[in-house]
Amino acid sequence: MQLRVMAFILAGGKGTRLYPLTKERAKPAVPFGGRYRIVDFVLSNFINSGIYSIYVLIQFKSQSLLQHLRDGWEFTGLLKNHFVIPVPAQMRNQGEFWYRGTADAIYQNMNLIEQANPDLVCVFGADHIYRMNIRDMIEFHVKKAAEISIAAIPVEKEYSSEFGVIEADESGAILGFHEKDPNAPTMPGDPSRVYASMGNYVFSTGRLLRELAADAKREDSTHDFGRDILPNLIGRAAMLAYDFQTNNIPGDPAGQPAYWRDVGTIEAYYDANMDLRAVTPQLNLYNRRWPLRTAGYDDPPAKFVLDEEGGRRGEAVNSIVAGGSIVSGGMVRNSILGRGVRIHDFAVVEDSIIFDNCIVGKRAQVRRAILDKNVIIPDGARIGFDLEEDRKRYHVTETGIVVIEGRRSSVEVASVIF
Image (cartoon, helix red, strand yellow):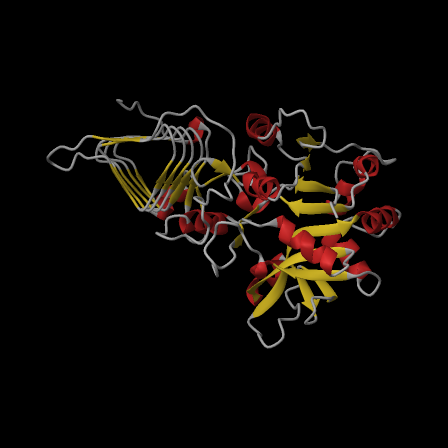
């Protein structure tokens, strides 16, 4: 049977824990891996899975996200059910609210579901790093005759306060749902881990519409799936956990572990980027059968120039360097360089993430840092070596990652000879 599937991507969160990277952009629009944006992962998963009817629900600081969707994800085909459309809050309720929660975001767009009349509705988050064959989850949903399926993965117990935690029996039937509870129950036989919801749901359409309508009438509800809708469905609906570890990506080696990262903090975001440096990374960006799609850019190839005596050589080791970047007589180690970056003579960049159009001047040193777009590091500057000094000018995390905002006025600016 050919099922009609509609997707909603929740891309309206504030992303406060990723500050200052989210100071001027929505979390899903934060760059990742040199040339992508975080939202590209969920969008690519849907397109690669053959699901083309996609609404992206936006809210906070959405301009950069809107621009990215326009540049990379607008379909120009003639099929009316092939689209990626950004949708702001419709304010259809009496109080004309912005989206008050994840469930309210879908409730305000119920008319889109009713008009299309799909068999299933996928509700996915936009702020995780992972690859997923969503068709596998849909097949699980249909085979199990589920009304709601929730993608789940084991995580360390210490993170239970950051996720919805699922209690499930051996068949996958959900017996309990605990939203961001530090005392949530651990997995049977494994006291070190909990079974965490990934925030990805497949709903049978009728059940979703009924629950949204009922939740909208509850004055004590926060109108959130994790806090309200899902716990209230325990014992009333066929709700099952889909084990993400069983997900199969075409083109990946057999037995390759599933990769999923919640990049809600600077440290988690940094670690996920650094994962890409491995010789055989768990997150495979080079699988042509499951490509990670993004906006198309007209950048020239990356360039490494100068090979002269005295160490004046452009090199990059264990690093990713995006198009248009030039490493001119400098060294890049264990780092991620975005588009149009310039690394000048005898400069050294180590264990860092450099966003688009940054300049690292001659003999400058950058270590364990994140440079937002358009940052200029002056000749001879040292970033990441004296954290107390760095804290006077930049944002420094508890683990010592230096984050420099993209506004040029917040960074020492010096002329750099090209």
